[in-house]
Image: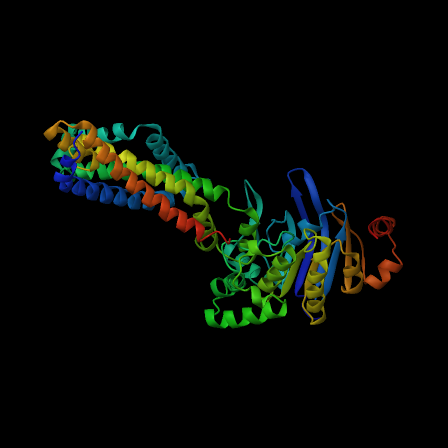
Length: 224
Length: 255
């Protein structure tokens, strides 16, 4: 057991930590942009609107993230028309495919969280908003969404943690994230225990930071 | 004759096959305090909820200050409002106080009171705050203005709800059993505020089980039975001299 190799190669791990952080953060952001309208419109009475959203959520919650990533990174290259279009410029990049797969995946899960908290909105508060003359859009913006936010926090912090851990598969498509860094170090020194233990510690640091921040955030709502 | 502030004409309401209201007429003039009594299932809450279209009437007319709420027929859903804009505008002129308060739990007391004036009526925020603070002063909760509804007792929440209603300067205040969800010792503080409002000439429609309030405060009482007005008149007349056998029974069981 020789942990000095970790200290010697710390630069790899720092780069990997940075890659994991921005990849996950950006995916979560894009996922949220997808999830808000998708979660709200999931309960729309019109099938032409809720149908496609249902299909999207069904597919991305129904299949493994790794399969989704392979479909986008390897599968899409099979189509000549795409390879000849301007889109290829992006789809040949591993980071772009990972970002796309992660965003669509977390978007689907988060949309389900959004749908859930909205459907358990206290009916009386919605009725009061109606009774005071708010329009449907105003009710959504002023009452439903802010009220639902605090109820969504526990489930959403879980989703973030799943995303951090799930992002470890980015290493499979050549990206040097935390897991990727561990792989490189292991390949160089053949010290798998030390290499992956270091990766595990970094994931734990990320996870506990998220848990801590959400704890503070939830606490700020406690009076309500 | 002046135009009634609120006029209900031949109002019917059915839920599927169940006829809840079978033709109700009611005029409320400025300053009227009308108590609506009846056993549970008599349709009194439904009547109140039809006035601001929380329930859509099956047929009949509702006029606010002489303005008819336009309805149209929908193949699937039957009668629906013709214009959501009109309904929203009229609702913003009628304030409702609910049995279970229904304060917005993510907003502080003060924010609850300024929400509708600022975001529905377009009152400048500073102005709305000044007024809201005066109203909270009035219902005795100024010191609690930064609290959240969950931190208040039922009686306090209902007084905030009344301040929220007053903040929109409504043409008519609709009270839907405002004391029914309160512990007995908290009923008094809410009734006191309502008594005050009646005395200053607010137009109020009150669905209630508080006989003393109906008898002493209102100038008109409506007794509903199975979706029809069974007895109506001035409280001093109908409480001492009820013409309907059912109303006689009703007051004897409630008293």
